[in-house]
Length: 176
Image (cartoon, rainbow, N blue to C red):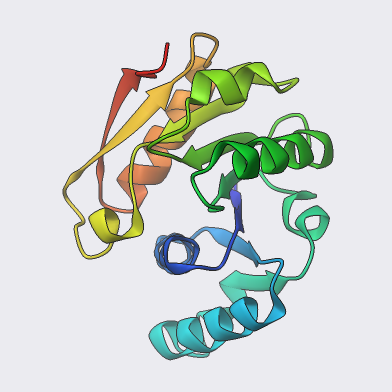
């Protein structure tokens, strides 16, 4: 089954995730609220992937278009409580019920964010920044779980990170 990955935010982390996921064979939808950011991401990824791989990444201008058919969603918005709350609220309402919401965060609690959704079992935190991931395949990626995080969610994220060449490790959210 082909997994569709939606990435919200075309900054450094979003671009890196889109590039890595496309190279690993995933179908990727990259969204950014700023058209210029999306344009820069498209140009940068075209140079890195080449035209033959570009069909695996679609560039979309709305969150709804990005998550409509997504299986796995990464929000790459700033790691600030208000930004995370807003994006989780939108994603929770727009994405299909099966979609897993993964959020790179260092300062915000995934347990708190999951509690604000209708799918707390399908939320997981990624304790990483672009600089710690880019160019470091084979290294460990720490995934924070909320008390309700399901095994199915952990399995999906474990497979995703392994496909990208990382060693996933799970730990309870430190904010619990």
